[in-house]
Image (cartoon, rainbow, N blue to C red):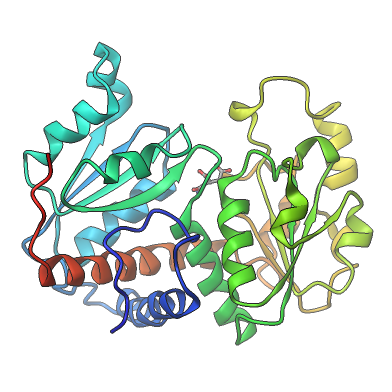
Length: 316
Ligand code: NCD
C-alpha cells in the first residue's frame, strides 16, 4: 500500500496512484456490499463522527452506512440544531469532539476551507464531505468509480460537466480528478454560471449543449445550486431547461453509448428530463449512489490503516 495521507480534504493533493488505490479497494467493497454478509472489520474499535453543518441526505447516509459496514461506532451530530446556534465557533465544537477521541471525523460545511482548518486542530483523520463551493472529494471518487466500471477505463474519455459549474464543489473535484487521470473535460453552461479564471483549469468551455455534447463519452449534469446564488443567474427555470436541460434531443449529440450522471439531489424538468434520469440504458445515477458507499468504505479504510500505523500527534 502506498496511500500515505492522514486526511481526505480534497482531490487536489492526491496523486493518480492514490486515486487508483482508493478505486481498486472500493471495487472490493462493491462486491462485499452486494453479498449477504455486508460486514468487515477494517474500522472495528474506531469511532466515526459525522458533523454536517449543511443539510444532507444521501452523503450523510452513505458515510454512516460505510462506517457501520466496516465495524466503526458511528455518531451523527445534528449540527444545525446544536451548539452553533448558541454561538460556539467551529473550532470550539471540533475541539470538544476531539476530546472524546474520535478516529474519523466526516465534515460538511458551507464555507470553503473550513474542513481544512478543522483538520489542523484535531488529531484524527478528517474527511471532507463538501466544503462550500471548494471540494467534495468522495463525490468525485464515486463518479470516477462509476465511470471506470461503465467504460472499462478512466483515461482518454471525453467528459462533459453541464450546468451550474460556478457554485459546484462537485464540478471542481471532478475537473481535478478527471484531469489527473488524463481525460478531456468540457464544461457546458451559461456564462453567468461559469467560475472566473476557468481558463486555468485546462478545460474546454461551451455555452451551447449541442456543440459541447458532440461525441462525449460521459454527460455529467449538475443541480442549480440556488442556495449559493445571491442574485439572478438565470432568466427562468423554463428558459434554463430549454437551453441547458438534458433531454433526448440534446443527448443525441453525445456518443451512442454515452452514460448520464447526476450527483443528486435532482431537479427533474430543470436540469434533466425525468425520463432520461430513469432510463436504465443511459443513466448510471443509481450506480453512483451504490459506488458512493463503497468509495467511502475504501477511503476510511485507507485512512484508518495510516491512523493505526502512526503514533498520534498531541494537538494543542
Ligand atoms: C452535491 C453537494 O452537496 O455538493 N450533492 C451530494 O453530495 N450528493 C451536489 C448538490 O447538492 O447539488
